[in-house]
Image (tube, rainbow over the protein chains, first blue to last red):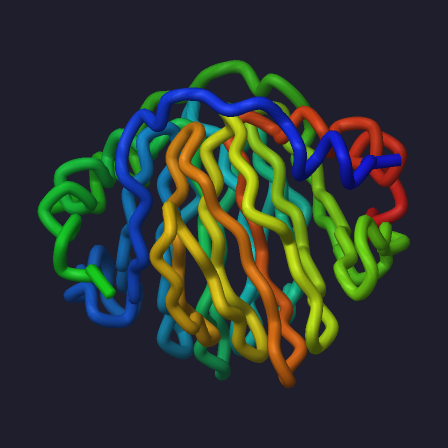
Length: 137
Length: 137
């Protein structure tokens, strides 16, 4: 089991960048498809994307090399991983390793979910860099 | 701006592992310090840790090589990054690059937050591997 002394007491190193507080809700949403909007927060090794689905919106099935971990925040969503679909609710997680096909759609209920990408998803980099200071809190 | 055709239409590759649906609430919480409990979900390149703070609990200031992105889910928390403290509420994010000192404490209100580590935090690997199927949904 994780030991508090090792978890909180590790040796130090040289920071690679400054830490930041971010309020993603102040980032201008980019509507990539009708009813589907992104608010990305860029790290050095990862990227957090707040994803807002209106009711009856869809992220088509797709695949990519970046690992993706999904956490549902509000509402519910039909989430498909490699052909298997589940209805996910707040607190539910989906783990999507490199190149695993996945997609999602809402029915009558909107949804807010968060995608964590490792490394930062290449197709979101331009938007995430442009938004880097919009979310400063 | 992100283009839907490139974002959803990229080429395919060979999956590196199976995708998974996980309900972190079914993972046995590990209380690492009084009032501070972890429920980790392991990916290949990243790790999502659900962190539950009771009221008046503390994660002492510490630092580590793994990048950490924090998202507050419920309640509120006093979060410190490199000596600067803010009160974070649901939806707020903290970005903590490698080796940046950080810590957190609750006062009268409990808090649930999610830590996203890239790569998986080494000190959580044993627990996360042991919990790998506890959270299967």
